[in-house]
Image (cartoon, rainbow, N blue to C red; front, side, top):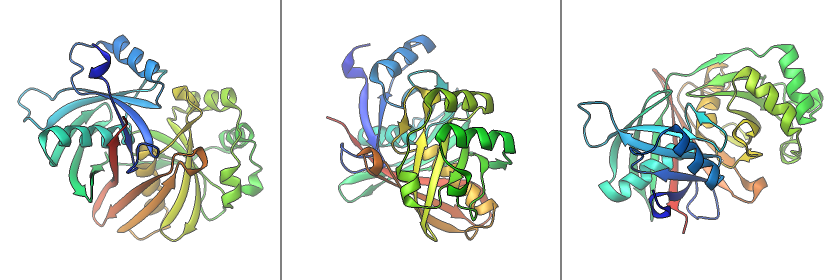
Length: 284
């Protein structure tokens, strides 16, 4: 495999300077796990996606999709899913795709949004879990966040929509912006709890949030735009009754890193799954 076989896209932005970069290999049939991990590590992005044909009998728009951080395989990655769907749509046309991921089946619809292509993924069924007092205390210590800096209206929870995330809400935008955490200490806790990221949030208004996602278990300090965490967060808000059961949310992420991005989270009445939408563009 040569360098031209590895595509580079950024998701949840309309400019290569924003959003979350992902590597994409549209035909990874010749790669074993070690080969995929090496490509992901060489790129250094938070995740890269590797595409192979779907299960036997699948149509031409059904694929198997795997995700690797620079450190290990992850069960699901939203921004790499969005980027892959857009890359495929540029070659095969907009419309519906289906990805078989380690977390389960993820349908994606791609349509045109102005000059860009926009992908909407539908998550696997989500769920929430309580976080123990000891684990919360350790997370706050690793982040160097006083407990008084949390927003009591958004209680800590473990949220899943394809990958596990610890949701912690900051009481102020400044608390969210001031992120300087103990990388190894937080990574150790995340490995023990099987977390993909810690979803740090600040609520600007009823349906608008700013978010950040430390990702030390993936070998990077922070994820710039996190679709899997956005899906989990949408489920979190709905299950706790913090938003209507049918709602559309806007999540802003990456500005504190200099890579601004925007994620749209859609919840539908009668459907437990969560939809996450965003644009994606190639990185020259």
